[in-house]
Length: 90
Image (cartoon, rainbow, N blue to C red; front, top):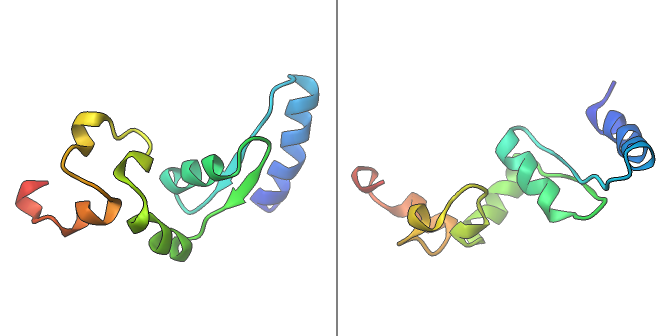
């Protein structure tokens, strides 16, 4: 069965049976799926493909990335600035 269809059935069941809201993100990996789920909260489902992510992520602030704390993101203004630094400094 197609993942989107499974999740379309699953979300209403969770809300009905457990009484919590569910937001779903679908993508090619866990990192992008987490970003997708955060984009359409609450009670939303969002698909984020690689091309859309490549266009969107460089414009976002580094704090947008899940699990990047204050120390790790110091010195970076955007996701794109992280990729422009020399490899030895990363």
